[in-house]
Image (cartoon, rainbow, N blue to C red; front, side):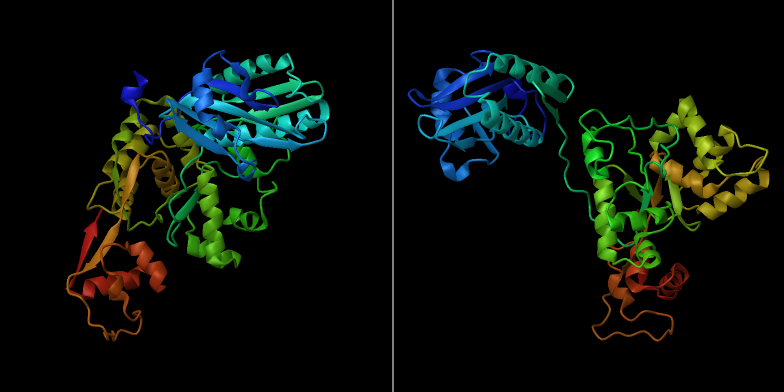
Length: 437
């Protein structure tokens, strides 16, 4: 049934169906020394692919994936050279077996770590080649824990090994000069309404690198990753973290910290990958926003309402607190054709309690309640190659950026002009149209 529903490359993860240990026996040749469940991989299937399970020396200690005969097998072949073996070498490969359509890249680090760990145990106690009676139990325990909890702890004598399956995500989109990074969790404090991160497990040292601790969590978890500025981040990340306020764009962060812009982008892209940071457009009162279907959650979700009110009133000394009705009234008023400034002016006349509008916009964007509409200038006529423009405050050739592919914020960063100057250029030129999207 599964074979008809899914296909190789569909991107779906499947469970580990079997774990087996393949070895090269000095008399019998390649064979399965142990597997769980028993007889999942038949002798006929193994014989057909044994040349890949116990490969030539050139590809020893390399992660390998074999997709054949309805199985996808991930392994890490090992060769140990020693005179204590009959052929002066021992070859083995601990393999994970999945469905042929399953995505298996997330298991590769686990298989590699297991292979290296078994190598150490073999060199010290001949744990693998001696046919230890504990091996079948170890494989059964490993299969159950990785499928159920996506992590496992293996204990053999004084040796303890911690394993975890980490989802491998695609690289995040490139970070642009005009992007505004926002900490998903404020420095040292979880995002309002979201649970804090649990303490590292036994397999994660308390002083492990932040990137590793982020990896040790499920990357598909909805919980934020806490950020401690005093943690052992790399020097560049520690330098830029205090400037990630939710209002500074990348160019401003680079200028304020005196760090090269490409390094700032790389650091922020790394933080985006691990779920520490997300990117939003620059918050300006000239922006237009519109509500999304997710705004309906704010009407019924009491926890979301509570966290929203706590976030927008944080640091306020006002005795009068806004109600969720005030918040909904403002968010529902956001629509195309109406700027944030116009909505604020309208709301201020009848507001019973003041609150930080920028924090509301920030919170609403983080939770997908509203979307920022961006302006894309388009030059209807192609400017001449040698065109120059007489206005003193106008950047030469700026109209070449009016292609409909660059938003107003990006043009301001690339041309190093402020938004009023760009607005004036657009308004003075009848050949420039503006697309909102």
